[in-house]
Amino acid sequence: MSIPLVDLVTQYEGLREEVLAALDETLSGMQLNLGPNVQALEEEWSEYCGVAHSVGVANGTDALYLLLRALGIGPGDEVITVSFTFIATIEAIIHVGATPVLVDIQPDTFCIEPAKVLGKVTPRTKAILPVHLYGHPADMDALNAIAKEHDLLVVEDAAQAHGASYKGHRVGALADGGTFSFYPSKNLAAYGEGGMITTDDEALADELRALRVHGSGERFVHRVVGYNSRLHEVQAAVLRIKLRRLEGWNEQRRQHAARYNELLSDLDVTLPTEQAWAHHVYHLYTIRTPRRDEIAAALEAAGIGYALHYCKPSHLQEALAEYHFDPAELPETERAASEIISLPMYPELTDEQIEQVCDVVHQGLC
Image 1 (tube, rainbow, N blue to C red):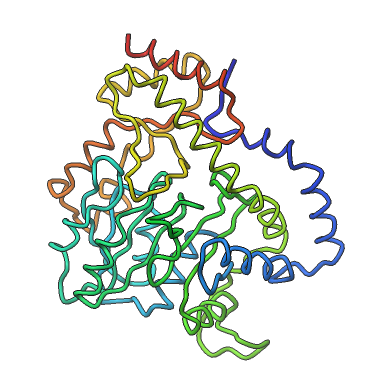
Image 2 (cartoon, one colour):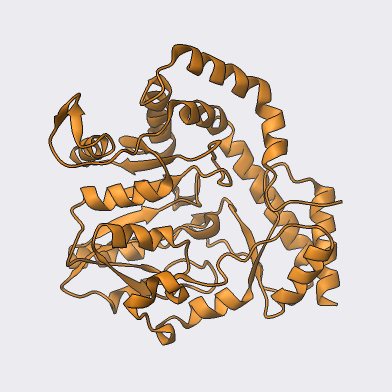
């Protein structure tokens, strides 16, 4: 029996009638840009995350870019972040004209190492950009303390952490602003693209609302040069349906992770960790072992999906070669990149499927 890394079809089958009804209602009204569903989703997402404002945009990369732009980050500024992330995190920094400064990760959570951040702060540093990777939040108290001491901004990349929390507070509500992606594979996913920015700063939210529609606060009046980055009404309608299920889906992910942990505990592999202050939502279930290629070969032979997030970290990407990042400063990043492998993870996984995956992992290491 083949098992995909992510099963979007099975999830849709359970939502089909509700989704089709919502799409019909939306398309019948033909208010397709920033209409009632976008407005309602922004309010519902704000309540869910515990923030004052949410601003829907076209995708998660735009969310990062627009937030950095609205915060005044640009040429001459440095932004400290990680290499062990999807390259969009770093692209956003570059697109606003700032310089990415990469630091190493914690080997257990794969999130930014606060102790390494402090050593990279310079007079040009404008912000710290932690990534809540795989569904586990970064150590925000430590990062916010550094930011306060050096008068820096903090921007959360929460693209993989919908519903995760740090000391009882949802990600996206822990800094100057947070960003989310609704890419189809995310815990909360659109049927296409979508993104969201969260903040408690009303002036910042107003600036973001203008930037996403060509710098306009009212029709045909353009205060600044902006962008075309609107969350589509159809995607918002889908996301509102899914948001009502997000907590249940995240709990299923946590149960699946616990079952994986139980069945893989006898192997010489490093299982995902959850810090005492964290609520992990397991966007990905990622283990690590020097023998990951053997596991990958066994999974592939058995028709089981897997992925290597991120076997080639950003500092090794050709697109960023001009920045001359020093691999010697990123030993934990490089070690993780050579050992990680993500196993199937989605709410609809069955116990039988998890057992089959674990049996194949055992076989790969025998």
